[in-house]
Length: 253
Image (tube, rainbow, N blue to C red; front, side, top):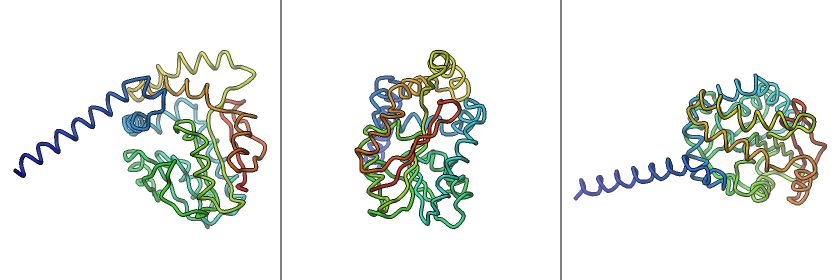
């Protein structure tokens, strides 16, 4: 009887894994930001994620994280939460910049968290739409290149506001669309980047989704309006690398 239960458990696990892989291989699942598909996609590229980021950004991701961490450090926080921390690179930068603060990284992808922990990050597994933290627990919350992958930007921002203390600091860093060279950048984003990313990670379909998600992500005035609707007082946005990425920051009301 015990053997039968173990067999059923193994079959159930195999079925679950197969479902995750099918979700990953389905562009429609990623386009709809199905949480299981997004989670599976990042799990598959976890080991090569950092390398892909560094190569595809030509090293600019180091500069961007340094700038984001400096902005957070200027608020002199005691507790900082990095949502969708992934492999923990921003959390590491935050620890260096905010030497007197406790920095916590949270993500829902276990393989990514394993990498973050190896970098010394205090990493917690959790859902950005229902975080395992108390109301008003943090002085600052960051999310870098993660809000774009969430099923509801509004619900995620409201949850970040919940865990922030009054007048706490929020920083959202994500990709954007440059105004001056939008056409050539779109060609790179949709035609060239997936090919190179596929060579680095073996998962070009994940990076095809990346381009589409960047196109639809709110930017500039749209992001400012969204932050205000969610109970934040937005600060002026900061364009990075000519508008390829942007930092949006705000204080919770």
